[in-house]
Structures are given as structure tokens and as C-alpha cells.
Image 1 (cartoon, chains in turn purple, cyan):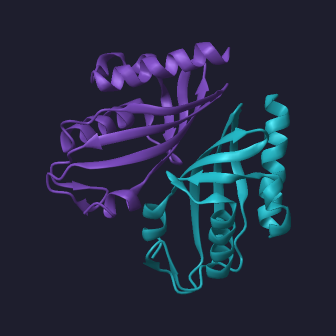
Image 2 (tube, rainbow over the protein chains, first blue to last red):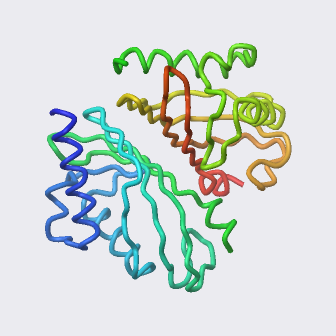
Length: 128
Length: 128
């Protein structure tokens, strides 16, 4: 797959998350997806995302940087949001926080097969 | 610059860090390098790295994933090491810990001009 095509798929995936269009998540995420070393599958992936939106009602994924080298995509996602209670074990309690996630994906047959994600927890702690 | 050439430069940069060859750091890092939004320059960059090796005598950078899309490089670096005392504000105190860093670099004229780094602090906390 060409780099331009893969980055287009990735941008459509992020749009899918932002519109909470869970019905179409399977267009972008493989059945047996692995997240940070755990095979959670698409149902576990959907559960993780719906839980994120439950904890952070104003959650929005903003692509700050996109590095595309098929079959891999790396991106820096920027967040500026208001977790309701606890997030990553931190007591946020309705405070507005800005932080980033650096994440790498391996695609297979046009879908996300594996994800390596790191959220900048230290940056959130510095704002509390 | 070609992708293969840039990934070669990146691998040479990591070899430079692992051999603590600070004399040659300027071959890979730009004079006015920006790290996580702060313009620390090459001297600040060198200070950061020597401090890391001081806090973690067995520090070794291991490239787990490399995503190269000139002028950007993204990588997942794996660490398996023994911080002496405090690291990222955590009291490690000589315990062996394994963790990852997801990091994105922007190169300019063959040297690192900007770095966006996130270390998986939550993974370290889970091991303490």
C-alpha cells in the first residue's frame, strides 16, 4: 500500500473515533488487534474507546504529527480535554488538561493489527 | 533525503548514544534542537543524556520499531535497566525495570532539529 493511501485510511480512522461511529470501527481495526502487547480484539478495543469517552466526555483526537511508512503509521495525538473523575489512576476531577499520546500502529490488509501507545502521564501530573 | 539514508543516520545516532560518544553527538543533533517544546540546544541535549547515564549506569537504547518518513523518524525504544535512585520522580532505588519510549524526531540537513518524546511512566509504576 502507498504511503498516501495509508495516511488517508489513518485520518479516516481518527474521524471515526471523533464521531464515535463504533458501527464502522471494524473498517479500520482488525478482529484480533493487539494493544500494548495484549490481544484485546476489536470488541476489547471498542470497549476501551467507549470507556475513554465515558471518562472524558469532551475527548477529541487531534493529529499533531503523522509519520507514515507502510505498513507502519506513527502519530502524535494532542488532547485538550476534561476527564470527569480518575484517568490513568490520576484524580483529575473535572480539571481541563492538555497532553499528548505518541502511538505507533502496524496495519495489515488495510486495518490496524497492532498498537504501541504511550500517553504522557507526567505532563498530566504536572498540571494537577 | 531517502528513507533508507535517514534510517541509517538514525541507527548511527543510537549507536553514538550507546557508546556515550558525546564528542560526536553534534554529527546527529542540531545546534538549536528543541526537545518537547523547549529549545535546549545541543549542550542542553548532551547534559540531558549524560544525566540519564549518571542516573542509569546500565542504560542502553534498543530500537524496537523504526518508522521512517523523511524528514521524520518515529521509533519505539525499549529499555531494560537499573536506575540507581529516582527516575521521572519515581523512587526506583536500584530495581530493574523494563519500559518503552515512543519518540518522534524531525530532521533538518541530516541532523535532529526537534524531538517529541513520551516515556511510559505508567509501565514503570506498575513494576514498583
